Length: 99
Length: 223
Image 1: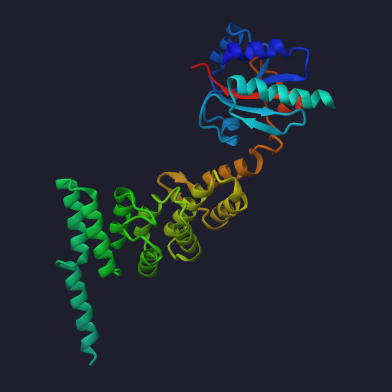
Image 2: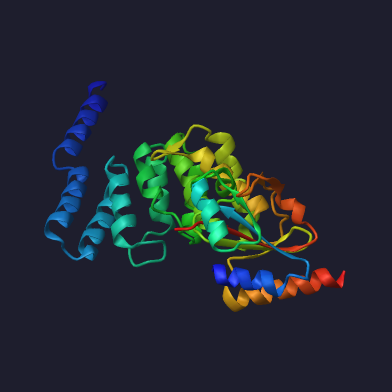
């Protein structure tokens, strides 16, 4: 997952695109993996457990779980991976850039 | 003349205590676990007993066995049709024991089963039976995009009418509220709910700070 995210971030760095995470690890592990994996994007810290308030509210039962939001903040895709994820992002970027 | 009903009543009690259909039902279920006959034989014996003595208090137990072991559902070979379900409803609608079978009807999609659960959810005087029927119904509709309104309505009914219901150790209202929130706000096409919090450096930020950008939003952990 992470190499794919890094390449997405690099590929779309000049376009209206962002990665936002929600992390369920204890704080020290969250900090060290953010540094180690060279994450240039922000993640919310969810209190150190998989039962954190954000995960509970979003009814997350599996990790990773993925949503793709358009530039208006609307949920457009859930749990897309690999080529499907790339296509989804490309479709939404085209929409955002057309405006 | 006044003795007769009492006599009949005590005879009924006696007959169900000694060798009645209830005991036969227990016998079949015990034999199933002991001798492991083909499930069909036990299922057929139970279906027959259920038709012969539909009012027997052991019927909910037989029904739960059928649901859990017989692989039966309406339209299968075992006559679990509308009449079969109607008999259970007629005699056991308000019996807490019925909940065990209903909790295994999660995901049943046949019209007869849905209608049966809806009537129990509406009419049972047992909190456990009506709440469990609604829970099973909600699960049947959870992934049905054509039944979103129906699904939301069932969850709202659970929340308003069964605020104290427990399912195992789980509080049903908390579960229903979470599911309702997901149904109303987390479906494709809905505006993503706001998220506020802090990042690895302790800096406060919001999901809506990224409005105007396509956002790849992912829940992750390093494990």
